[in-house]
Amino acid sequence: MTTPCIICVAITGSLPTKQDNPAVPIAVSEQIDSTHQAFEAGATIAHCHVRDDEGKPTSDPDRFAALMEGIRAHCPGMIVQLSTGGRSGAGQARGGMLPLSPDMASLSVGSNNFPTRVYENPPDLVDWLAAQMIEHDVMPEIEAFDLSHIFQAAKMWQDGRLRDRPYVQFVMGVKNAMPADREVLDFYIRTVARLFGEDAPWCAAGIGPNQLTLNEWAISSGGHARTGLEDNVRLDRDTLAPSNAALVERAVELCGKYGRAVATPAQARQILGLTAA
Image 1 (cartoon, one colour):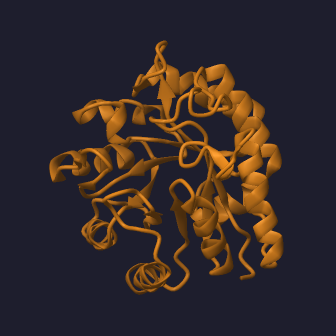
Image 2 (cartoon, rainbow, N blue to C red):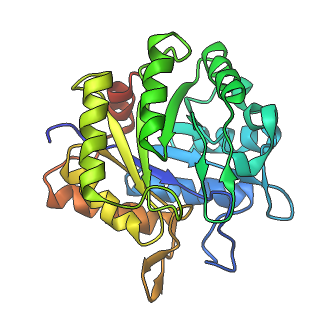
């Protein structure tokens, strides 16, 4: 519990729209402003998706480049993590932004069910994305929607397909995937410690109303926390979140409740083994 807590803000995602919450940042300029507010509130990782002119998800490298440039200009030292998620493109287009060499990128190493579709991550695409991350010096964040994904990440690390020790994020509360279950989370935590080392950092993300629950479980267990409008557009059942920063502020309050310092950008980079900004 002496380790400072890294707060990741997932600013936009692929699904939320301004009809869901007017605060969801869609244009790159809005995303930069929203990220800066979240950074000032205490977030040290920005998990980024981009949208096209119609507000639809895209993997357009030019849009990612503009967003990265803005975050680095306005949020000194913040860790930029780009999404290779499947809603933004198909096949190798999902990794088209990796040559930009962001600090980190998300990597899903297995498939699972989503609310209305299968989230497909075939082994050949996973291996290609992982190889691109090595080539372009990008640290992967493993998005674990299932226990098997943790074991697959360990296997890939052991055989060299992942250069860096995986930073595993447990994603809980997606309909038709892993629910938010405390006993499962505790098993996940023990499994990461067994496979990657007792000092291996990990993160947890809760979807929708599970966001606050997972923030509290992670922070109180010595892990790191993800929040943001990608995963949850509300403060509570009756109140829309006014900004990404408001959700970050809520996670910061939980850090205070459990005696955790909030990691600075330099501390977050040290914890994750990233080079200084």
